Amino acid sequence: MSDDFKRPSPHAWHADHLRLAVEAAGVALWAWNVDDDRFTMDERGFELWGLPWCETVTFEELSHHIHPADRDRVRAAFAATRAVLGPYETDFRIILGDEIRWISARGQGEDFGIVGRTMFGIFLDVTGRKQAEEGHELLAGEMSHRVKNLLAIAAGLTAITLRTTSSTKEMAGELIQRLTALGRAHDLVRPLPDGQGSAALLGDLLSVLLAPYDDLGAFNGRIRVAVERMGVGEAAATSLAMVVHELATNSLKYGALSSDVGTLDVSTRSSGDEISLIWMERGGPAVEAPPEAEGFGSKLVRRSVSRQLGGTIQHDWSKEGLVATIQLNRAKLSS
Image (cartoon, rainbow, N blue to C red):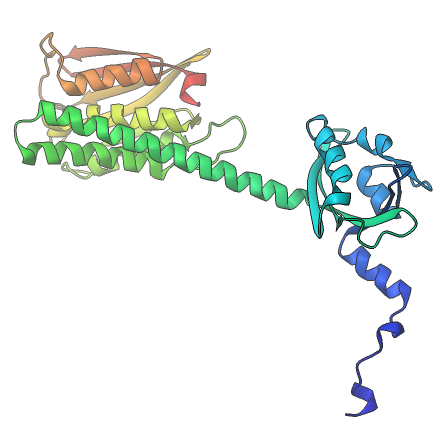
């Protein structure tokens, strides 16, 4: 092998080169005297802890920056390292003003490599990793919660639909329609900017839910949605989807959407903390108020509006067509 390609001796590495490698890795070096409990750190260590550089710093001085919930655990962990066999790692939070950082302390236990009553190790900023882990845990919890809710709703709808239909074909048709309505609402669930709710924009939600009914007549565009731009929360989106589906299904059977030239206008009217969703049908057959005994669909609408959305619904069975006014609390709708 040519001398030009010989591996350099470890002794050829300059201390400055090692320092550059340490800085590039974002590692802070520390030494801990087990007798007087004082730490010696490099400049990176003091920067990490938000302290001005000095010769040494005591654990008590460092502990002022440790999150109160982690302080005793960190103290006990450092004391226990002398009995730990092999490498150890302790993660904890420190507070710097309004900022919270996650720090990982790493070293070798059981007095491994101790020199002059001093143990050695590193501090590493792991804030990014911890935030990612917390985000993954939050997402997993949210997905679990959402799946459980959907399964509970599906089970409830199946049981109720079974009691209110006369054949398996009728049951399958109604159940599929209601579950499809839920699916369309959940397709829209996504994060929104602060102050606009947490699931979907109201106009987007209504447009997607009503789109399947818009091409069933003699012309397109007979369903018009003109509502205030505001966000709808996940729970409210699910309940609102059920309400819209029942109203649209009834309109398709008996109201404006049963006519080729019938129209449906959905709009909003605001009053302080309240918002009214107005469902107006025109151009369909003459409608009459249903008998006093409500069917499942009507009960479902009223229950969803009152219990899940915390609002009220009123029906005006005029000769021109149904006008349904759903009075909602704005904060409840965006939650």
